[in-house]
Length: 615
Image 1 (cartoon, rainbow, N blue to C red):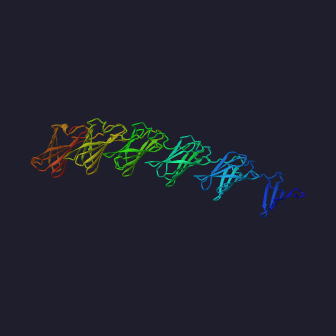
Image 2: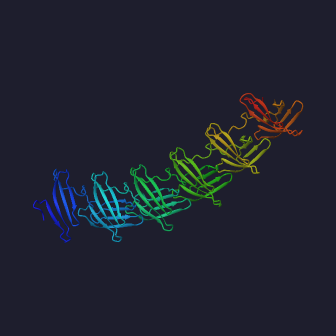
Image 3: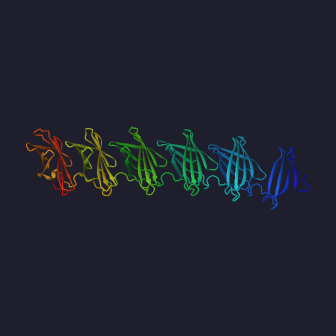
């Protein structure tokens, strides 16, 4: 029935269920019309339609855009709180709703749509799961999607359309890219927190995901892709390992890769594409150089924190890695990562030594090498290419000089902290190292040369050893450094100045030696008023000591390799007196100084004037 005013009407469900309601047309002083629906009890309702007196139009009901579920043929997708992906595809009737939990896809069939076409009810007959889709409007400037889990089997999908644009929400990645549309065979890769490399190659379907742990590569085949094409599930049935790949968007200016280890057998690979560029992340080496692409025969080398030289030669296929600490260990490449930026090396001789070589980039202006000792048998060699140049690090001696290229017969010499003279003579076949302790000259023969040619191992055959190294220095002058490591071990470091790359000026800058003043003599008095007369000779000089009554002749028994020092002893009268003669250069006038070290031991220092003449 309708009221005489025509403003109210009574409605009854004629099917006999007893449901009824009254609809009333009213006016309101509010600036906008509105609708009010009141539930009186479970069977009785009131619908009050308030017309605004200022406009007298019926209320704007439902979606202010006028769009309905039937208006679109596109799709929206999003993720609920359980990380399950929901994909809804619009249709004039019987739209599709799919839920992807990572391994399987659940299909909801539309079973009922509301008269307004703004709501639809979906059910999956097989599982009993159900859900409702709502098309709503929002005053927010952007459309959005809201997915609610009511309980384990009931869902809500609310599609909010912005009144300012009335377009469906941008869902998934704003570039519109999916795992299927990114160029086939494009790759992204990076390391997880365990240092394992993950390498993903895009394909239109069944993409490749490989995980490289250094010694072997695990392949996870794709077994299922989500309806949106933004997620994929990968599993390896033989090992039980599995993982999910996500293609996501980010407002960051740069794309990035995120790799998460869920547990020992479950992984996540998240590929974030920047909204501003929509390109896949730049992964690995931005130079594009790999262990295979660096010119054949190129090499890098350097010392680890123990001073052991590591030498790597690029070979396109399997590179060569040598470790030299006086003796040499060769490591053989046994596995290379899918990116071609990393390789695993093992000592095939059974010593257990192993390492990983990695090609990396750095924003530093210069390339550099980093060698890390993991433990006594495991190493890491990281080759950092500068993005500004992308050349391999300048390693070793920047002069290009080695123990083998410095002219044969050239010498350097100097004293260690114990005053023992070390004298090194270069030779491309077999250089010689001699040490002189004041009485005896010990000869060290070359045992091995490192791959770089910058270091040599020398031994005297009795257990005393030394390593001679050629290095460069940014100091203006070259210099020599001799270190006593232990009673039987030495280091001789020859630093060439990068500005000249000449050998250090060692010994007497005049070039004069004890042999240079054949037949000449110098005299001096010691603190006990003993007269000392030294007569030079090309081979064996004479040193006479007189106390005013008696005179003792000391004869040369040993001359240092540099020819600047000699050892003398009285072997005729067996007085037991002995001493060392040393030839120096002074900045001013020459002088002779004789020091009594003990009643029977002397030291004579002969200082040549700046003109390089005897005092």
